[in-house]
Length: 298
Image 1 (cartoon, rainbow, N blue to C red):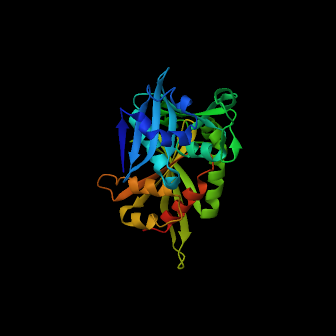
Image 2: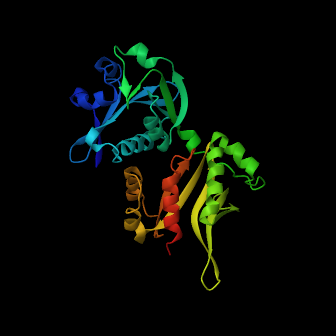
Image 3: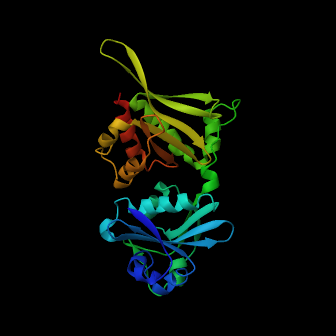
């Protein structure tokens, strides 16, 4: 799989572009001034066009995947490429889309958060009704991936402990999901132990799975690490490299399996990380599938 920049003859990919923006004259508004990328995996499968906006913002104007290759991780691969490529250039990467739950959820899983709406965008700018997933599009909803926010880990003061109140203040709306996550850990026999780590200068939570053997011996193992960020919480699970193949056999989405395949082994450590940036409970099923898998590994 390779993602390439396209500088000439961009209209050769019009059929792909029309999958995401079905009126050609609307595409013409941004195509030439924008930067185009295509994803090649034994043929062109996906396309993306981004434009430079004011105030250090990059806008994703068009992103599309051929229908027969959708829900296979290619859209996420393209988004990951864009965010990583431009994260040190732009403070904000944003995208506008219709209010279609499956589409909005996709962007949220990729680290985007809802920002604002443009009322009647689709009815005012298109010469015919636009439908997606059976829903007529009216307003455009903007989501943004704020690079500065993503870099801002909180709970770094040794004197400010990670109490319920302090974590809630850091997480904002994401605290609802965090509370649900902590409560659900009880049914998995996992407790979170917080400790201030001087090397990273931050409070980190260690998710400890505790159990008792048939002989009555009490044991525990680390299931994950937890950290608090500005508006979201991060759960990182370290899987022994020798179990990567087994991890790929779990009941997970194609996007998650692509993430596992792409995760790099950490230096001399024989582990690879799987990280969840969480603002809602949308990914809890996959999160706990991997946590439960990690619990039984030695």
